[in-house]
Length: 427
Ligand code: 0T9
Image (cartoon, rainbow, N blue to C red; front, side, top):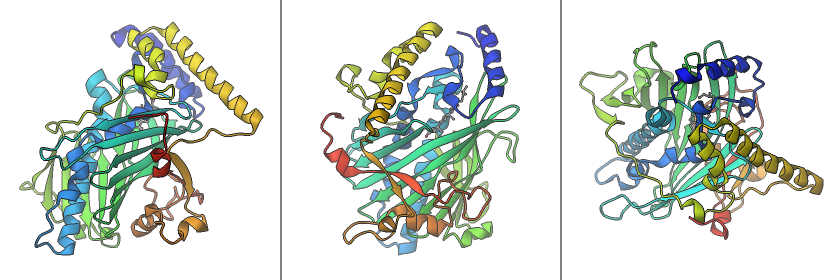
């Protein structure tokens, strides 16, 4: 269906935005802008480049000083992070022609799958993706990518708060990712970039990233990624500059940067020594050439009722058919069933049991001083090293800056023991 054919409904949609109350799910968007995929599926974008995610495990440390080794690891983790962005923020444009409004996951919805070993020597092993909607109001998704063979765990959670300006939708991300290479004793905290949706007035929305992402390593090394879009600084869309520093203190002056990576995260970037991008910089990453590893998901017939593709099947079909009536009917059915569940819980004085994730309070003394034999939450030390707020503030908020307003510090964490005893939902 062409955009022009839908211009009237798009116009009324854009007008309805004027009365936006902060709840994106309350906006009725025209069918052609709806994605037939739920946000719980978006967690897979974090690990479509298995080689880059696992790379730090395979760095040859022979002859390297510990600093040289930590720098190599940081370059590798930075490359993995940059490699996630094209899938995260461009893949709907590439496959569907514009950004789309995702299906709004229901509480307890899960999306799971696996990446089979894509290495030539069986060194990667299999990685499992677990994604769970841990909150509906506001929407929050928790995820974990578990690679048992290399004792590598990526976990994180994300939620968004959106506000409309005259021409764009401004989206603040909450949450973060934690990457643990347990064989190496190396941990990384990754903060999520802020973003805005452009092209709203012409019915062809797309994401632009803004501000910064931080990658803080337990070794002290810090990568600061700065995002800029079309018309700003470089004039090219999806631009970024990432600088790697010895530590947070060194990052106060960009002249201290050990490496500078510069280019487009959706295209080509180069890496140069020092604080400036040089023409002679070596190729860092080419997002257009790197093939993605395909997540393997069970056929719908074998899925549990809480699994995303099964639960949304009828709605997704109606979206693909562009059938407005059936979209609202099937969506209402699902939403009413959810409303019923919440009412029952209220009447029984119960709450929905999260399956594989739990909210951990970083202010809780028991979390700050873990019992013997248990590990402290990695974010405690890593936010400290990066001088980041550990509160429930927009991702990447620096301690004491204007967005550092929430002292609450509750963060969703993967509970491996809950996954180990999972009996109903299988990969
Ligand atoms: C986490 C990602 C996030 C989710 C999406 C803003 C957005 C919902 C959140 C942040 C993933 O790791 C990365 C990618 C895209 C983000 C989505 C883009 C988008 O437009 C939606 C919002 C909720 C809308 O659907 C706005 C209305 C729509 C008409 C614009 C297309």
